[in-house]
Every structure is written in C-alpha cells, then in structure tokens.
Amino acid sequence: MSAFLQRRWPLLAVAALAALTGLSALDPAGLAKVRRLRAEAVRVERENAELRQETVHLRREARALAGDPGALERAAREELGYVRPGEMVYQLEPAGASRP
Image (tube, rainbow, N blue to C red; front, side, top):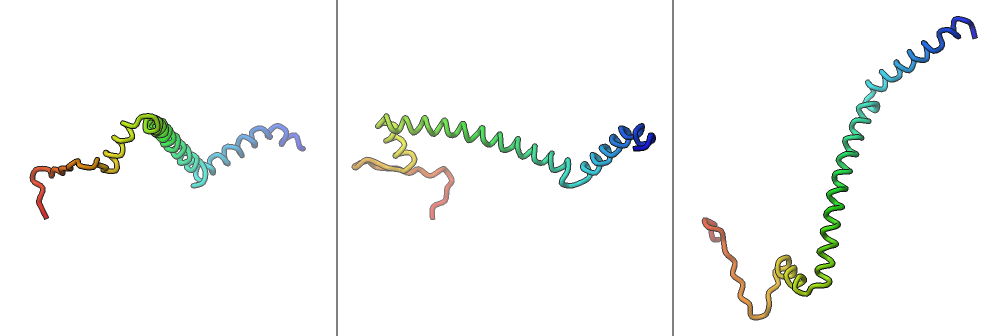
C-alpha cells in the first residue's frame, strides 16, 4: 500500500461509511422501513398487552362459571336469552321507535 493510502485510509473509510448511510436513508427499504417496522412493533406490543388483559378476564370468568351455578345461570340468561319455564319475557322498545 502506498504512503498516500496509508495516511488517507481512515478518512476514506469514514467517507465511504457516510455515503452508504446517506444512500440507506434515501432508499425506501432503508431507514424509512426501520421506522415503519418500529411503529408496527409498538402497535403489536400494545395489542398483545390488550389480549393478555382479555385472557386474564376470560380465565376469571371461566373459573366463575365452572364453580358457581348462579354465575352460569346469569351468563345463560344474559348472553343466550334463556328463560325458566313459566317465566314471561317483556321486551320494551325505546320511546319513539316505530312499529313495523
């Protein structure tokens, strides 16, 4: 290697690195993609946290339904519309609702 290249090698390496960094910033698959992926990772982490909370809630509900007949009956009535034999169901329409 010539004396010129030995002295200028670090400067050339820094210049090449700066050029590659600049090209990466301009490339659609470069820094912009990294930013998009980071934003997506934040969104997915937030969604995972919400799903973990929902899982905890559903596990509690499942334990309550398995061990409490009253809770099971309440769930069947609320979610499935079950009624006991002999019960009468009244459905109230909101005020101002038109009849068919």
